[in-house]
Length: 254
Image (cartoon, rainbow, N blue to C red; front, top):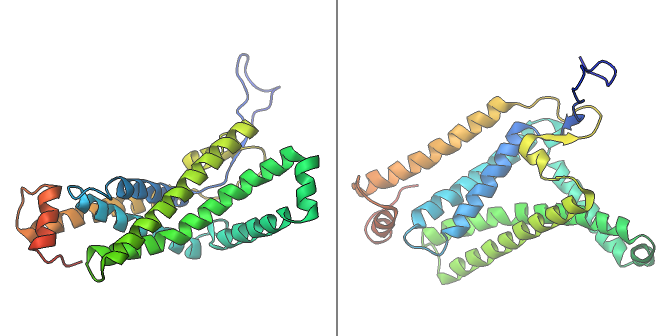
């Protein structure tokens, strides 16, 4: 039952209306991708932590794969067509900015234009990141397996920097837009809900699927770590010695 101001007990305040806009599996995939990319980037230049870099890279690809599958099999509200619509809207907006109408808008309605620029910046950064991640993971796998020359490692590093640029752009635009609107725009990806009246855009949260997916991700990381230990036959190995053995003496069967 929804309380109104007239039916609330004395001293109580009405809850701010909100609606669900992100379900739990979508949010879980987002944070697994973000966390895995962060770990992979931090450990990318360290030989001592190379095994963690590899595990994080594979985890990032698995999380992205889950998000794509969820976009195909899940409800329409999380479908992959959302990314396509965002890209289409952003490209149309960019083209419009070079027209007489777009240039005039920055003069007559700068506030509205800036708000729209923030929205399109968020969308474009997401699309660029999603497009870069599969190639980042593939180039990393090829580099790790030493299937090509050093140029693949350089390409992997370039793609990593491109992905980092997209992440920084996304966070920066999100922060500026949140300050501009006096609203935490990151909150829907944390709690799944957005302030405002109206029906839930995502009827079901499906927290069980998010928990199952997260458990599978943890299990994969643990399995890969243990597999590396057993492959080298060294139960007391550290990440540095594991990697040294894998590169100079052990054949790692993925």
